[in-house]
Image (cartoon, rainbow, N blue to C red; front, side, top):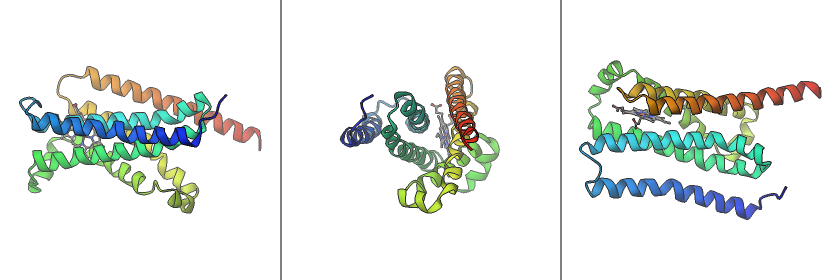
Length: 205
Ligand code: HEM
């Protein structure tokens, strides 16, 4: 098996940044040219929410893909993808607070009571924030085992992100159901990898 060179992985990282940037440019152009439909605010919120979820799914796909292709260097794509997911989620939150709520903070409590899925969204965002802040190599070294324990929270975050999506829609449940199924499959694959690792660990002790 040919090992990917450092240069190829660096190019891969640049491609990730470019591909994650392009939809934002596209969104800006679409909204400014009046092509975002009758409710551009909803259009922006939905576009960014979906983007955050798609990027989170891609982040979670890196590890099984790297194992399957036996290309450990691919793991270096996980951090940029995860950070972009956090960036999209932050823009999603910012557009909701600014364009939808118009910074009317007194409305927040009322909104949370009326739409409990927002609480789920907030917990996902807080988890992604913690993962983004601690994603630096130096911090990873300093935190040791606690770093991995913290970063395992991504599994809960992706499951809750799927729930947030499913719960937020009023009628069209087919697409969010497909997302939930994909997330469940990803979690199953990850669980299998962990069980395999534990088995090997106990066998060689
Ligand atoms: C503070 C955190 C968050 C808030 C306040 C929030 C708020 C919202 C709102 C208001 C909607 C639109 C619901 C409607 O149609 O009326 C929505 C939908 C959505 N959100 Fe969030 N959200 C948050 C975090 C997240 C995160 C972290 C993700 C993903 C990682 C996410 C993914 C989605 C998705 C996929 C949708 C559905 C988009 C669609 O229907 O096309 N949200 N969210």
